[in-house]
Image 1 (tube, rainbow, N blue to C red):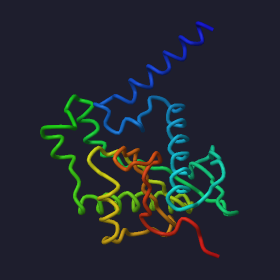
Image 2: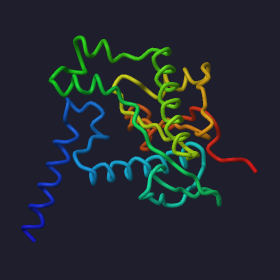
Image 3: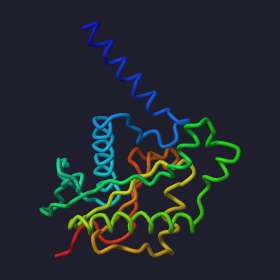
Length: 205
């Protein structure tokens, strides 16, 4: 029993260290191994399941991982089986700078990390276009591109305001895209914020 507790404590300490890398910049999505990545992906899609139920009233079955991704998961909603692919929206350049001991909370990195409507729209369009080309080349059509972000200075409130006035370009290989944010304490709810970027989550018959 003591050995089991020691192993649990060691594993917890390892995850804490993993999350805290780079001053914790997008740490909730950090992983050190392929097994870690699978755990993070499973946790992320489970958060998405909770969020779409709370935000849109959409109930989904347990996601089934796909060993031959893409897509990453198959999810059944109302009798429809959806292909769901996960992708991070995290600025790797800034994340690397944080890992090199620049702080995201002051100084030049803090200034560079600030979001504007133009940067937000450009990033989403670029991400969807690049992923769409990849799926098109592989002959795969994705039902839901689940973009997940933990950018410290991007909030769901400002993102929603920008999405209401900007059109994000879809791709023929991606039927819909959603944007899932890390937990935001100021919202007063437990589930993560989720926004529709383009397309419809449920295909109307």
